[in-house]
Image (tube, rainbow, N blue to C red; front, side, top):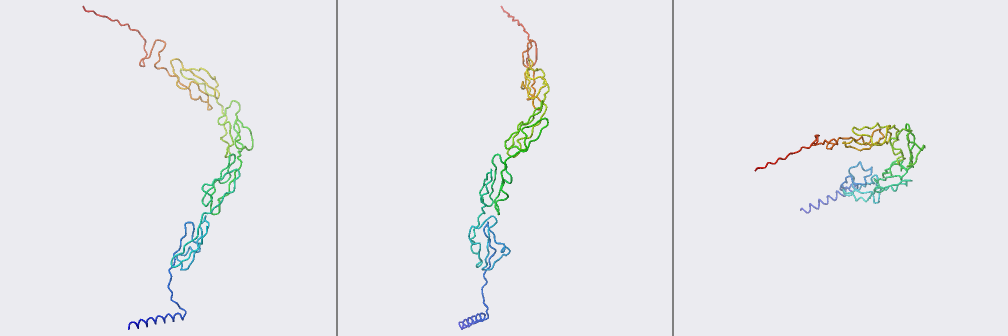
Length: 305
């Protein structure tokens, strides 16, 4: 009895499917969807797929290389199948900007290479100065900025000075070219006499000044002039001192009149000798001076009988 019911039920089910198919209807199962896929660190999903969070079974999406990277082969497309994405075959590698055009009178150093993110440094040879940006970087569109140039170093005319002059006089001076300053009569030059055109297009130092140099007549207590200059004492004049007898000199005996109108390295001093034996018969004993005297001593010997 039970088997007969099962046969009837199965027959009924088959009839239902037959009727549905007759009306163009079909019963199908719903396949699982796929979530938004992710690619490698150097690639991303194309813009038209970014807004979607899920994808139907059988849907396909494409990836593209990230900025600064280019395709090295492999299909950029993957397909959703039974809730899983097919393997992504796309390979992306760093963009290569290639070599920078040669810089006349300059050299190019590539720190790491010529690929995306790498840098190159341009330097100029001696006698030439860089015009433009020294460091270039490989970016998405190639090397950033314009390639610099190396122009010949030139210095403009240096500054004039009061009570002095320089030569030769020109509108421009080439690399390492020298100008020489001089002062009018009775004046001395403070600063560098010779200036040269340096690699940065400027002279090696500021222009000097012309000053009048005259040192005061030097005097030291308990000392005297021994040799050298007499007033007026001009620049680089020298004077040598000597101390009186019984005095010792502290400092250098010879001084020179410097550009600032002062004696260099400074006037010496004469200090009294504390332990000297002087010619009048007096001597210093324990810091006190007294007369040297002779004291006869009488020895008396007693004899006991």
